[in-house]
Structure formats: structure tokens, C-alpha cells
Amino acid sequence: MIAADLAQPDDFDAWRDQARRLVEQAVPPDQIAWSDGNGPADLFAVAPPLRQPSSPRSVRASRPFVDLARSAILHTDPARLGLLYRVLWRMQDNPRLLDDAADRDVALLERLAKQVRRDIHKMRAFVRFRSIQDDDGELYVAWFEPDHRIERANADFFINRFASQRWSILTPRLSLHWDGATLLEGPPARREDAPREDATEELWLGYYSSIFNPARLKVGMMVKEMPRRYWKNLPEARRIPDLIAGAREREIAMIATGSSLFETTAVPESLSAVAQGMAQCTKCPIGCNGTRAVMGEGPADADVMIVGEQPGDTEERDGRPFVGPAGQLLDQALDAAGIDRARTYVTNAVKHFKFVPRGKRRLHQTPTAGEIDICRWWLDAERALIKPKVILALGASGARGLLGRTPSIGRERGQAIAQSAGASVWLTAHPSYLLRLDGTARAREHDRFAQDLAGLAQVLRHG
Ligand code: URA
Image (tube, rainbow, N blue to C red):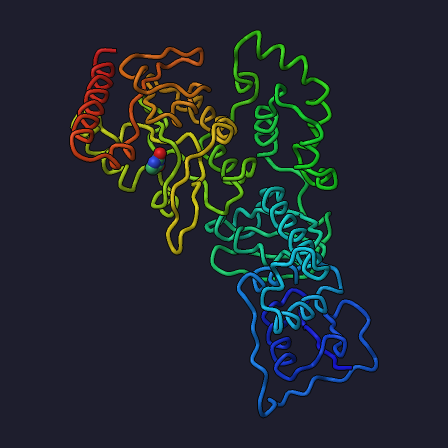
């Protein structure tokens, strides 16, 4: 037997180097005792020969295999290293092995990778930071218990999401500490090492209660999405039994008043509390995609609020709304209408950037109505704090975030839409739409946009 040891059980590169050498030396899978330092070592195994054979076999490993293997290696099943090698070994003679979904090894590998991917997703969705103060200022600390060894693999997600904050994620296997510049690893932690509550807890609970739509309650689906084993570490889970119990009455109340539940829940006390809450929000798939939330921008006492759809590529990178091409068009049009952007509060219906990757580019994807509705709570919170007199919705998504329905911009633009929450809402086209047009359509739509803004300027002047 040949011993193949990994110093770190989640170290894919180390596994790949050893596996490559073993295939080059034509060592069959049943001759290798893999160990990752977590199980009993094989006492009769010997260290692998490190010499290069004079005519090594060339090694084939397809991209799909490497992708699967990168996930599967994070599984806690001790047999995974041998399985990975067996599949790699068999692929040398059968490069299309992965296409055979009925093959036992392939099916098992797919299953392990899928369980790991699910665990990664759950960690992104269910890590809940609490803020504490230490000698260096504010520190966000979270406790999480992953099923598999996904902590390091997930670190980049949290670094990208909370790049400028200091945070620690504590787990039973290790802890990760980000100081705003460097990621450090620490020893395993205990649940008691993380704070149980913080000042934003009520904000989060309020948000959760408000987006808990009793009319859509399907307990089975909810438990599938948020398995019970995570509940003990999720502050909002404490509310679930009461929310389920009261769902029927809440639904009746909603229908009777035609209201959004937001009106009945606590509003965050400051824009910075809103920013902090939305930065942590992973309630919809966009919130879990690793981008940062982009908060609205402008004076807290602005008379005008402008609501777009969602941050784009430039906005997500800069962390500011409407600073890319659509923002430039908006700035010019506001200027031409005599509206000073610096005196408006500019924000979006959806706070994270939804995109599909295409090589190095991130292509915009329109948020679904459900995603806009989930994010509405944050927009409502900004609106309740700013208390604008007039709100301008840019495009259908911005309008949905404000009205709770998707209007026809063509039919409803150019008139005030009164709302129970105060402030009249005005609709116009989205500047990105204008940027996509050519020729006469472009000229016509630019004109209509300019007219809408001129109308808004008039409302502001004359009330
Ligand atoms: N489009 C939007 O809807 N919002 C932005 O912030 C930028 C582009």
C-alpha cells in the first residue's frame, strides 16, 4: 500500500499534485491509502515514491471533473479522497466517464459535490453577524456550524461582501478573521465565544417579520429552505412559530387594509442602521451572490427621492447608486430640468447587483417581482426616514418597489400616483432603457424623459 496524506483535508491543490503523480506512476486506486489527518492512518502503508518515472503517463483531468472535485473534497466523508482518485484513474481510459450519470462512482461524486454546494449556500444565507466593540472599534462576529469543510472555500464570499468591515466567523473547526485587509485563521471556537445579540437584532427581526408573507406561507417549503438545524443560530427563527400561528389573522388584516406589512413593523432608526441591515441581507438569491449592497445616497432631508432598479456593475464596485452610464444620463437630464442631484436622495428598489458572469464581464439581469418585493422593506425603510415629498420611479422595477405592483410606465407616467404612505409617486422610463435605443425611438424617448423631469421640476417649484 502507498500512503497519500493531505496535511489539510480541504486542500484540493495538494490532493491534485499527489493524484497526478500517482497516475503518472500508474498506481491503481486499490494500492493507495488516502488520509487527511482526520481518520486512522493505514499502519502498513508506505510513503509514495517521489521520483519521477522515466516515462510518466500523461494525466487527463477535464474541467468539469476539476470543478466537481474542488467541491467534493470539502465533504467530511473520509472515503471522498479515494473516490476522487478512482474517478480520475478511470477517466484516463474513459474520458467521458462523467457523462455516465448511472455510474456508481460518478453518482456518488455528484452527490458529495451537491451536498457541499448546498452547505456553502446555507452558510452564505445563514451566517448572522453581531456587532461588538473591541480595542480597534466595531467588530462583527458570527457563529456558524457547517456540515462540511467549507469555511476556507467560503471566505472570499464574506471578504467581498464585507470588505471594509472587520469581522470574525467562528466555527467548531476553525475561525476566520478579516481585519479589512488580511484574512487570518484561528483555532476552533465554541458557540459561547460569539455574542448572542446586538443592537441590530430588533431591526433584523422586524425585517424578517415584515417580509414573512402569510398569504404565501408553505411550511414544508420554508423548512426545506431553512432547515431546522440552523434555527438555533438564527435570531429570526425565534419568530417563526408565532408568525406561523398568526399567519391566518395577518393575511386577513393585510387584505382588509390593503397594506404592506411594513406599516405595522418597527422602522430602523437611522440610515446607517438600514445600511448595516441590508449589507447582511441574504433573504433572496441576489442577496446571496457575493456582491455588496448599495445603499441610497443623498441628504437625509431630501424633498425628492429617485428610485432605480438595482445597482449595476460600476455601482456595485463603487458602492454608490447611479454612477455608471445610466447615472451619467440621469445626471444630464436632471441638470437640464434644473433639478440638483445633490439635493435628491437616489436609491434602488433592489440593493444587490443581479448578474450573470460572461468571462470577465458581469451582465445585468432583471430582478424578479419576488426579489423586488423582498427588498421592498429596505426601500420602505429609507423612504420612512427620508420622508420625501415626491418620489420619481425610474422604470418598472423601481415602480414596483414603490407601489407593490408592476405598472405600465407608458400608461401611468406624467401623473401623480398618491399613496397611503405619503409622498406622490411619479413614473418615468429607466435611463438604461434609453441607452439601449437607436434612431428615432431614442430621440422620442429622450424627449419624453426630459418632459417627465421637467414636469417633476415644476411640481417641486409649485408644490
Ligand atoms: N441602474 C439602476 O437602476 N440603478 C443604478 O444604481 C444604476 C443603474
